[in-house]
Length: 147
Image (cartoon, rainbow, N blue to C red; front, side, top):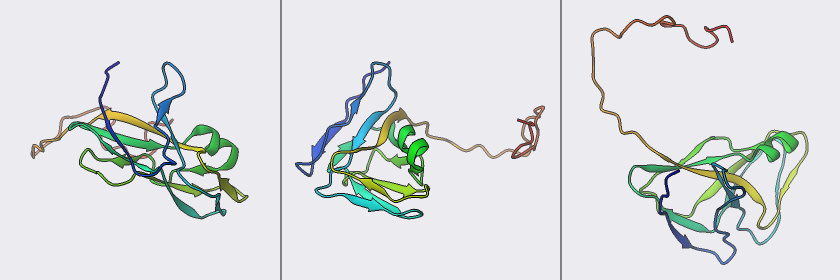
């Protein structure tokens, strides 16, 4: 594993430093920095502040992902999953949550609402060609492998 140093600037006293919940966890839990409950009705999207900003090093991104427990138990997920935090973004981090479940869902202060994975980013240099190499799959699209 590689240690990556990320700057953390607290914007709200309600902010909780993201943390890994187990030794080999890939993602750090993100906590709602809210003073009062936020109710997310079925089909609705709520933007939940985290109360901090980050400084990711060049060559890295933050991936905001759903928490599996919220998704499987309540149908609450991140609609733009994974949400991308670019290395040059310095504003407050927030998480968009969508309620795909049948009942209203309540986000409470300091609740763990998502997770953050910090990952390296490849920068692409496009090489326009006349032909692409042949593969067994070829141009087969969605569902073409039969799985």
